[in-house]
Image 1 (tube, rainbow, N blue to C red):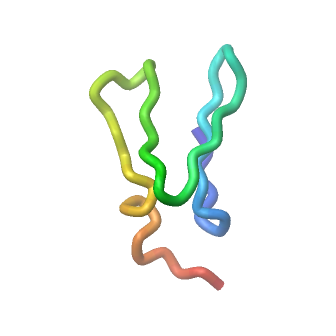
Image 2 (spheres, one colour):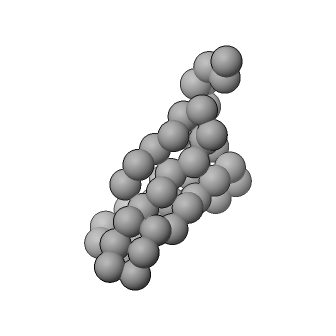
Length: 49
């Protein structure tokens, strides 16, 4: 998983390839059952500059 604060995205990599999550989306993955993270909450307060 790679988080890019500037672009406010998270890219998850697995055997099926990369999947990008962005603003307004919730990151979840089969490898992390029960885990969900709203990207807006993750990047809240991160300076954009």
